[in-house]
Image 1 (cartoon, one colour):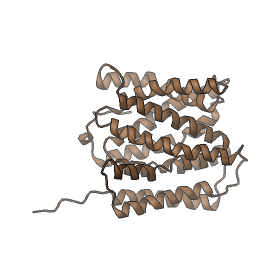
Image 2 (spheres, rainbow, N blue to C red):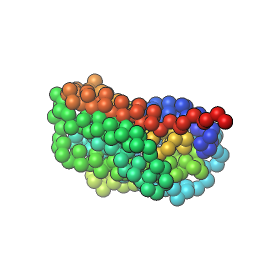
Image 3 (cartoon, rainbow, N blue to C red):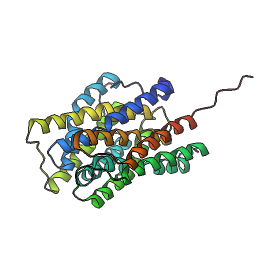
Image 4 (cartoon, one colour):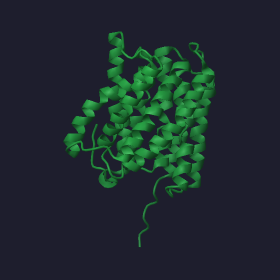
Length: 300
């Protein structure tokens, strides 16, 4: 993961968009890895952060010097991300990977409204239309009926996943604020230091199996750490260079990747409505990017 300074002007917009799309695609596979760990949902979140921390520490020291102490915004980011992972992983346990990832990514509405009211990032009307299209496509993916394997408790899993959208939105806003003053790797390191023990405590309190019992499960835990660094790191880096509302819509490519990965690996086949929803969600993402372009400066 490349970690430049915390200054938004350090990279062109296209690089930030490319990093954001790459990060969202990588994170799309995290739901698959959670299923393969063989641990409890919260425990899987703990291993994701725990395996990422050593490499994040090395990256931070190389880029920014000594680790120092966590800032308040880093601690808030860690708390929001722990809640995000805990609720999302329980959603994955009880419903399909596609439905859980879709519902947990319905954050653009919350993020855009918050950024509009509190951060004075007023969206264009065309962007609002693009957001509606993207969220509508995501809803189609979640509502469609596939021909895949049965799930344990779809209503409960969908509730957990939908609640995740709130925590993910607050995480997005915290990262966006933190990136104004901190490098991405430092922010991720300290948020992981805060979030990992919270997830471990939740796993122990809920009586979850914490240790992976197979080599495949251990490999999945390590994979979650690598996905966290490459995927979430790219997203955090890009969010220092893009409006929060724009970034929240672009990451809706994540449920599309997760849906097709679940189809290939777990037989969670996508129905016609889900397939159409993927196309609609991606069209909304493209439209959002077009709507959020800055107009070219007029020649005097």
